Image (tube, rainbow, N blue to C red; front, side):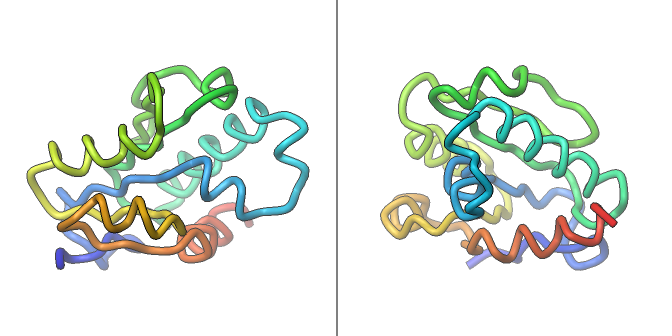
Length: 137
């Protein structure tokens, strides 16, 4: 098990935070299903704000799939890299975890994905959402 990524000061500078955006966004019953692209755009903005506020350490990679891809361009901004999954977001996250080469934390509630992404620390969406709350205030 690798060292978890957490609030600033609790992780090394090279620790990677991988985010299953569909799973995290889907954990909040806020009407995201009515506008998947808008929900993705807001979520990516929250992640970037958390980095700027010092609540999360970069690098962060957030994977968008399906209609959510229209919500944020593939680019790196404020330590958050957006990746568009060509197919399955889970497959993309597993590939990114395998290619990382260092400590990583995957945020997901998907047990199947967590098993497939071996060698990474796994956190539930509620953990990440609790890190975002201080940045939003």
